[in-house]
Image 1 (tube, helix red, strand yellow):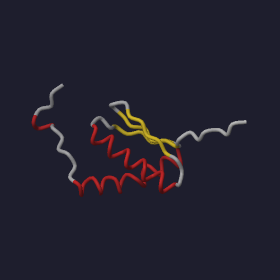
Image 2 (image 1 turned 180 degrees about the horizontal axis):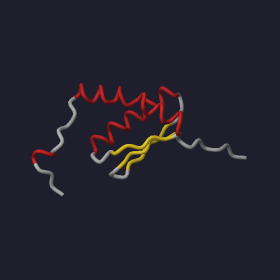
Image 3 (image 1 turned 30 degrees about the vertical axis):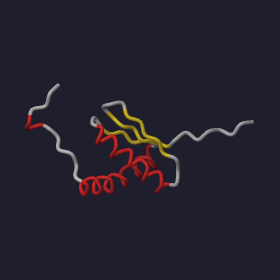
Length: 87
């Protein structure tokens, strides 16, 4: 599928990226603490990269391991499964 010139996305500049990341971190933290996961449309490499950064910052803020995975349409951010101690 080819996008017409009027529907092409322009990449975020550095300032927009910083603001987007800062704005999404509290939202992701909220969803992680209330629902255990967060899913959002991320259909470009730029959006996947943005939300991977958001996931890292959310994990740092919560002081818990957080993982993210993308399938080309969505990215899901969730708490990482902590390994069980071996008996």
